[in-house]
Amino acid sequence: MTPALTIDRLNVVFDRFRALKDVSLEVQRGESFGLVGESGSGKSTLLRSVAGLVPVASGSISLDGQILGRRRDKAFYRQVQMVFQDPYGSLHPRQTVDRLLQEPLAIHNFSDGEQRIRRALDEVGLGSGFRFRYSHQLSGGQRQRVAIARALILEPSILLLDEPTSALDASVQAEVLNLLEQVRRDRNLTFLMVSHDLAIVTHMCDRLMVMQNGEGLESLDASALAARRVTRDYTRNLLTASEGFVRT
Amino acid sequence: MSGNLLQVEDLRVTFPTRTGAIEAVRGVSFSLGRERLGIVGESGSGKSQTGRAIMQLTPPQAKVSAKKLSFDGIDLLTASAAERRALRGKRIAMILQDPKYSLDPVMTIGRQIVETLRTHEKVGRAEARERTLAMLEAVQIRDPKRVFDLHPHEVSGGMGQRAMIAMMLIAGPELMIADEPTSALDVTVQLDVLAILDKLVSERGMGLIFISHDLRLVSSFCDRVIVMYAGKVVEQLKASELSNAQHPYTRGLLNCMPRIGDDRHPLPVLERKPEWAA
Image 1: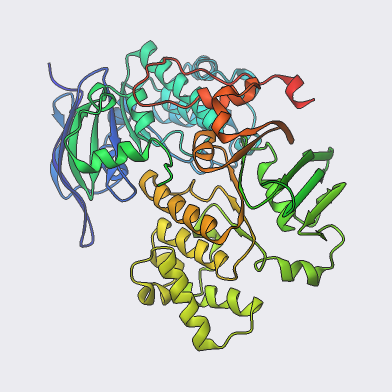
Image 2: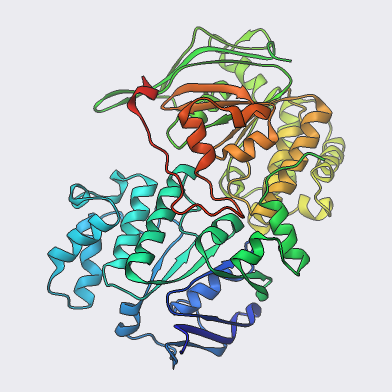
């Protein structure tokens, strides 16, 4: 079976800075794959390169075995959608939720917009009462739900998640993570999820890759991580760090 | 332990809005000695406004009232602007969440720290520079001379937050208010910054108010924790007794975080009951 997403020796260069150095990974259909690392490790760049938001210097990205070109076509974006980190920045401040959700439908010439918007809002637990509100009238968690609804409305098969809960409170984070798990189950979605929080990634993902300085340091199963079967010191440090502050 | 550095009794912060007054903080009382106190709650629980009211940084349109708000015997509510200015930065200091926004972008890090020092103490240029360099070293910046001449945009978030801590500590405050000091930082850097803060606070015998939404982090760092919901204190307890928390809100906050190695799908979600806010 061909993997849903294959990244082969990918390099991304900004001016003279190599943001990604020969990174390879494979994500199977229906799998949830996590990328972990500190700021500047290249995890978001990897995600953005899949979405076609950063120029690729060398290497290839393929979707269902098809190598993607420099420009992504419309069909690609029907299949792959992204949810960004900051719900305060990723929603248009002058557009209502309704208008925000109509945009992708208009681009892809959907005719049953009315129905889809209602269903998408229901699915993310917002209900139609939120349909004609502006994003500044919503809380952070509600905004992130709108962003998820916008990504889901085209019924993609792959969802790229860039720290979807790091701007949210711990209590709201649980709600959004539950929502993401549920839509993944319901629609058999493939997730590629970035987070700096090991606990979130082990909770959400089956496999994960630890990144540092633009390189893929280690790939392992979430269960191996939970059992602390890691080989690299860096991963071990991350594990210790996620256990909270210990007074020495 | 508890008691005499800071006393807060029935603190209220009210914001006027078009649809009537909104009480962000509704009758918060606590007292603080030279200890580490954590204030935990979700966004909108009034935890930051509590910290800001103590620091006198409440926006001008808001109204602060309290039966008692005193720092080391000084009534903060009736103090004149000059008296408050003398306290702020010198005896009470505050660390804000994101060094990207809380440092002056057009001033070098060294100059900002020197400015704080020379505002509160009569020291010469050379001595101020010496003390700033020493302070930067104390917050574990490896090359203080280089960082002294850098602008905030030239350093990483962790480094910026260390500079911020250095700036707040240079005048030797007795009370430090840290409002989400590590939320903008990476997990690994977070622990470094906390370790620095912990060491300096205990060495200097300061009182610390640590404001955060991360109950676990706060409980591993503080002696005592206050849990706030909708502008009120719902529970106050020792950090070591967190596992025996009684209030369902506290328990909810504790349980909703994913943990490595446990398999809870879906995660327990916090149920908010209107009677908690009553």
